[in-house]
Amino acid sequence: MKILVVDDFSTMRRIVKNLLKDLGFTNTLEADDGKTALPILERGGIDFLVTDWNMPGMSGIDLLKAVRANPNLATLPVLMVTAEAKREQIIMAAQAGVNGYVIKPFTAATLKEKIEKIFERIEG
Amino acid sequence: MNTDLLGLAKDLVTALEKGDEVAVGVLLDELAGLRETQLFKEIGRLTRQLHDSMISFSVEAKITAMTERDIPDAKERLRYVISMTEQAADQTLTVVETLLPVSQVLSEQIEQLSTKWDRFLGREMPLEEFKAMSEEISLHFKESKISLQQVQSGLNDILMAQGFQDITGQIIRRVIELVQELEGSMVKMISIAGSKAPKAALQQSQPELPGPVVPGVDDKEGGVATNQVDVDDLLSSLGF
Image 1: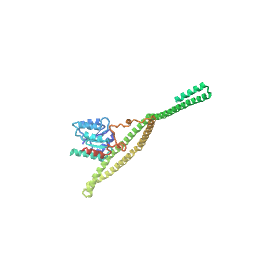
Image 2: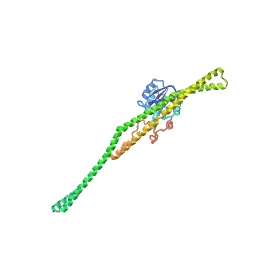
Image 3: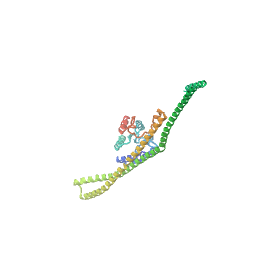
Image 4: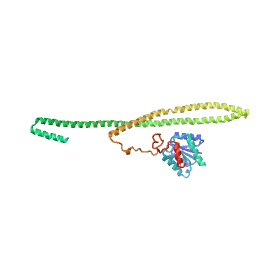
């Protein structure tokens, strides 16, 4: 299981990486915005994407749309971890095909629960 | 006032023609008095104008000084807050990343030893294996001591890293004071200019990505999720 963590703040990437490690996911890659994330995803081999929304260059929602528009990536599970909390935004992300939505600040338990739920749905 | 003046002038001509010197004197005094009143009024008006423009000048000078010095200064202060909080988060994360494997190793060692110990208590352990276990236990004690010292010093580092909060709190408080002062000056300037800000200008532009919800500020109008439960409810209402 290879996971790509996308966030423009390195501290947030480290927090997510450590939480993922604690959940048993040790194989993680990092990118600091959609622009750097997309080539990594296109190269293949990524099984799960965790992304922030508000990032310079290319935002998380645009990355999500690009992922869904690419036939090779269309089914990639995507979890959004973001401070954006407006109803319209959450609905927009849902319509763009996000698999889970976690708002910051979040707890380890919330992240764990959402990730498990996503995998349950994929396997089931 | 002009009719007063005209009346007085006509009376003055009549009095002069008549040669009534007393009346001429009275009328001249009256005319001079009228001039003086006008002059005083004009002086009063000019004085008020001067006073107003002096105040508005000092307010403007204050705002100018603020935009030239205090606002760039505040921006620097806030940037320092970002860098201090980032530093503290980095320090803390580094300690945690070093200590997590240390505690992982200890917990694995304990797991293995306790299984063996149970076997020993159940008298299921041959002597040779017991000797090996004794050595492992001694080694575990030694390692635990070193590891716990590491944990201790790491926890102290995490403790010290929280010192940023005092500093950033003070810096942010200063910036709040500056914003308040600026607000006061602007209100004063608007009241001197005598015009109310047009309604349209009062509408704040919304950023495209509003970012973190600040309790009591961003959640007043509704339409935002204030916690994960709100998000989950919304998503489940959408069939998630």
